[in-house]
Image (cartoon, rainbow, N blue to C red; front, side, top):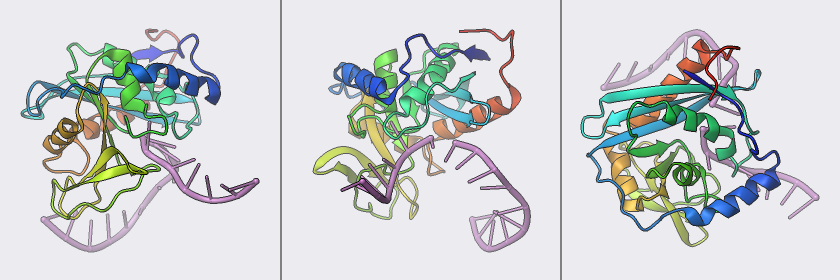
Length: 236
DNA sequence: GCGACAG
DNA sequence: ATCTTGTCGC
């Protein structure tokens, strides 16, 4: 496990953070299809917080895309680097998530984020930001529609409906289990929306939430409990 | 101005 | 995100 400091020059205000998003936004690549579902590796990343002590733990769990078996995992713990502000979630999660990804013994393949990518007030959510910073293909799978609108998809698993910002399709509501609330998929970096949805379906053979996210969620909670950051931990 | 708002 | 017991159901 590695311990993370808030990076030098990290935005301290909402205004600075929005300026960073505006500057990085045009580096997102939207014209690639991305890795074929069911091939290669898929990595889930997630974060857990102890707001009382300003501590954050991140986990990255690498799955074999064909079998969904865990092939590698890593965690990182750090100091909370930004308050939660809708639209600025990335600034709260990215330093620790990057450290967890860096600690992996292998390439992550497609990175699945717990949140949004293109579906964002400035079209630059967590998945977009993480993609630009790492160069890896990324997608976002969120549990809530944020500020966007959608019509309920059909009741059968696999049904979709557009996630809309006005009339612009910024993502898709995707039913991953029959009769259960859909998840909300948007593209991050170097992956098409169709491919992002196909991956999400491949990752949800049993549960509503992608297996990658579920594995990362439980691992980062565990890391938060077990690894209260202490002097002498490795600093990244 | 007011309310809503990924995690 | 997080605070939180038991409980219904496969």
